[in-house]
Amino acid sequence: MTSASASDGAFAGRIYNQICFACGDANGHGLHMRFERDGENAVRCVYVPKPEDQGFPGVVHGGIVAALLDESMAWAMWAWDRALGVTAKMETRYRRSATLDGPLTVRARVESVRGRRIEARAHIEDAQGATIAEATAVFMRFTPEEEQRVSIAIGRGEPSVEG
Image (cartoon, rainbow, N blue to C red; front, top):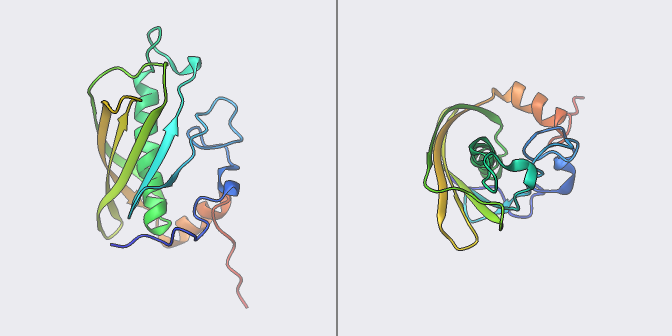
């Protein structure tokens, strides 16, 4: 399993011009996550929690933590092979509360691929390096036709030109 080239434009700013709750610039209520490569088949995001992200006072809502993990694994698929798909199953382990008082570092990587089934792993650390949460997930990659359609719709791809 090899990743796409680090200079292939996979993380160009234009691909964030979409409505996605986790990474889209066009979503005023979203998380506005930004990713970079973090080794082979892997990504990294530094996320600074906002007051709107809290459940209990001063604590990031568990659903936001899950969204950070899920989105990072989806971006790891994109970094690996520009793969797009949907989460089929995700298992999350919350180890401690994420607070609003510092940045969270989210890391994810593709672990294995079998046909359209992609397995990924992610974890979140606080500013002191303590693990906040970790997750594993199975994603189902779209068919090539659906992947191309979705990629174009969200600004990650170009329409194919047929002669």
